[in-house]
Image (cartoon, rainbow, N blue to C red; front, top):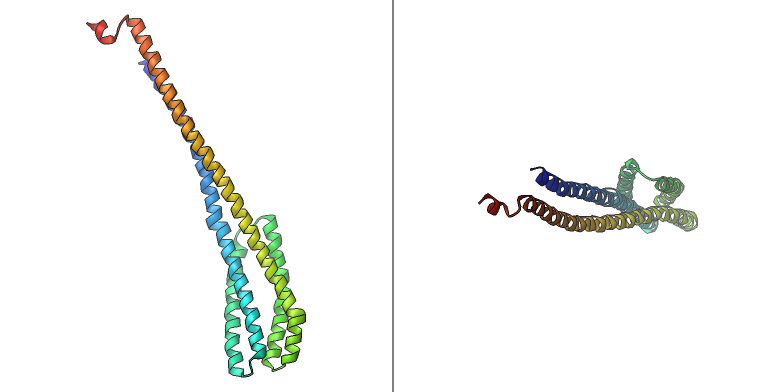
Length: 219
């Protein structure tokens, strides 16, 4: 009984160590996948929503300047307001999410460029609604458009950061997968070898002590 207990105990210990190491790697894979899907992926979507909203406003502002009829201008203003609501909603959600120091710096840049660009766009819109086409166009081309481009560039930089984080998390998850696979394969081979070794040792010990196979010794 003691020999069998030791033999099985050694095999079970090897299996337990293997299970702990494998579960550790699987936990790393799960963590990286959560970052990719629930963190980086969400941030990329929110930044894209913000970028699309800014692009829509930029395009519609030109329509407000060029359209001659007030009703048409008012219709375009509805699009601007809707896009700005979508931007603000996405920004609020993004700002609640955790960020690295680099991510916080990029968010600060987005806020900075937004604070510079949106008042200029408001001024262009005001001129466009008032029928000051030439003045609105000049302000748009010389100040508002460049400021808006810098705003969009800062958002795109944040998207690139999240994509880089995704690539990093994927590489780490892939490395953890290969390690977990190798640990599992190695532990299976080790446990098999230990089982065969323990079976041989116990059998040899018993037959050596009995002088024959148990059945023959009993007969």
